[in-house]
Image (cartoon, rainbow, N blue to C red; front, top):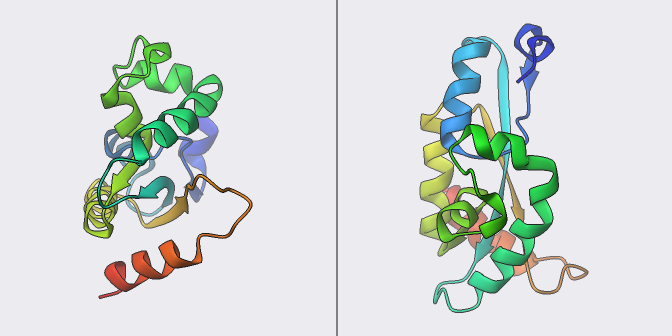
Length: 137
């Protein structure tokens, strides 16, 4: 976060990680809006999400290296499982709901989900519906 961010009415941090949100909330105070975007992959079996998550994480690295180092990921180019999991929440709708809850517990006021799929040109309507059904219970 920059000094300008700390004086604003709200921010949207570039990395949806609960620890970075806790730090941002501490700097912003309770009155500012803290909104985060979480990349997600719905994959109940977990078999198909690993390669897809790694590909998206690799694409996200160039803009997030410095922040990842602050969070303790000093060898971001290795794309280990902990780093991929920090960038992308994957699994069942319940798994995604737990990550969303962690963001709220860390001080987020708003969490938007960006659903990643193997076919980015096709809107993930089924996944949106499944997530909505779980998150809006």
